[in-house]
Image (cartoon, rainbow, N blue to C red; front, side, top):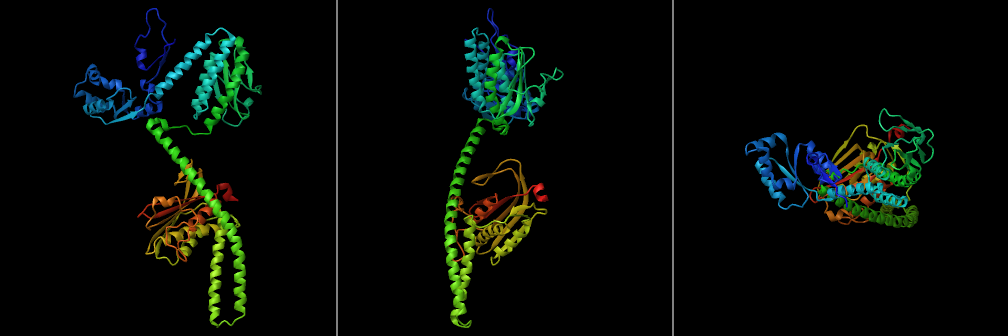
Length: 556
């Protein structure tokens, strides 16, 4: 049975040894709060000048103030000068801590807050101490078979945890801890290889000023050191070397060959952990409390649901595009026959006959139907795209004045100077903009205002886009179209991209329900993003993000 003592500064002032007994292993922390709370959270409070409290201290806060020699006048003055506020790190073990915190805060006249942390952090420290204890006991095993089994068992425990690590520093620390437990070396050092250089072009040393170990002859997975008591081993993933570990002065050099085999097996998992860590940003969500972590999980669940809605929306759009393609093809053939017969009829009568006017109106109707067929072709992806690098300013201005012509609305256009170029099909982009603008105009039959704004934006990380998707990092030309209409109910926002869905009354020119479906399809084909935000009584805003060309592409 092994006893491990965890603690803070108290371990440095108390004599924990007993007569005739061996001093138990000690794990001392710079701050005792690190035992129960994430290090990032504690350090953040300390940087802000917050005085951190524990439930145990609050149980006897009056006694503690008496020991410090504080009275009712000195205590508020001391805390006012020494801290910006109070924070209770509550593990949930001691009941009544919140009321004691309030009493103490009133006494010292300082603002307070409570952070519920539970016992997960302490449990992790205890598990880590347990692993250290297992490592030490493994060193005392005498038989080779027993030691080999223990080594592999320990490696499996730690490497399983490393698969979940997303921070590279944390992964490297665990790698060194793992190698330290497995081999108990006198010298242990890890050198990362971040740049895509060959392993033999790197070199490293244990400490600055020490003899450097050139790796010019290090072409394999490992290399035995000249001392005969250590080795170099590559940490790799998918044939890419991510780092090199130096292990020297192992406890039992007679087992060096077995150590190398074990290290090579463990190194594969270590390489996977570092490769994963380099693919993710360091998680910062633990710095505020477990409540923040719960919120993050809720956000992830919401994101999953949004993605499911996005997939469903794309499936609906795909089904609509297949149907639209078939309809457009057959309808286009019928239109050709109708228009041909109308032209033949017009040629066989005099222009002044009454039926001539009727035929002319019928011909105009077929032209409008032909325009509708073009929209179906765009929606079905059958329409040909002719992309070119262009400034969208002219297309946007022309679309504003053509689409809103006849509507009693005020047009407020704001386009920034030096708008980035985008690769687009001007005709299709114009159709998308006109569809959105016509929707805005139809939403205000009794007048209103439409704000059109175009600007350059850039995002360095993935950005949530409305209710459905996430936008990739990069440069974009952002077009915002906002109206002062009645807005929409939230339940309508999930259906606005469905073909023929509309909140407007049906009519010859209104409520066709193809506007946003067509616009979404066009913007999607240009690898852009279209989102809609609306609330009843607050109007509707449509945002379009089109990928901007980089400098090299713009210079062509």
